[in-house]
Image (cartoon, rainbow, N blue to C red):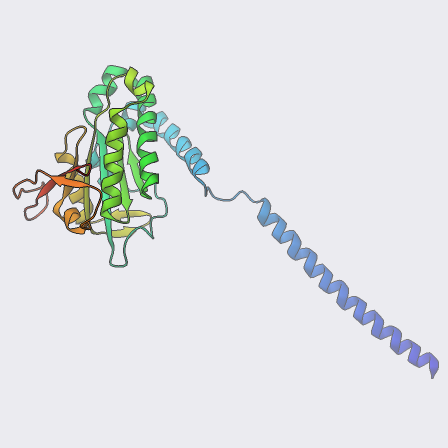
Length: 266
């Protein structure tokens, strides 16, 4: 009888140990799986990784198209170029899809490129980009995409976009040594507020085209905005709007529009 009880007890202990071993094996398998996931290279998440990714893509484009084909483009190109830079901009627009869109490019960039040569022009573009990105970040804008010397940027509100644009023009009037050495870079900027369609990290729609058309009207060193921007500004906004145009037509868009010049507050 005693022997039987000992055998039963031993069987119970063995089963428990087998259960513990099975549980430990599952745990080890899970740890190995977690370790493998941790060691797997993650997708580019931070600005440095995204910048490296852009450099690689740009190098590929240079090999395929030549450097001039890569860096010479216009605001019009930006409205059609939807695949080069697609950061997360889901939260930039209001619930109804309203966002403030800012377009910019360098006046007479093709002529400047030809005069400076490709090598110098690329360095000038880098200095120009630093000025724009610094002010855009200050006012919590999001670069939607770039094409050559052109930027398309989204802002949560109209005042932030206007103040960023004023700051950019102020910075460019006090250029870095590089920009001063190679000649003045004059940037034209256009701003519009309206509802847009967001897809795959990009914005589309008539209001995007309208913002680009407003930028097309600007001269170097000038910031223009639509009447919709004026209507979106609070009464105490720290920007000035002057010199409204008579109602004008904009290429490819129905109706007529009033365009204002954006200046620092009086």
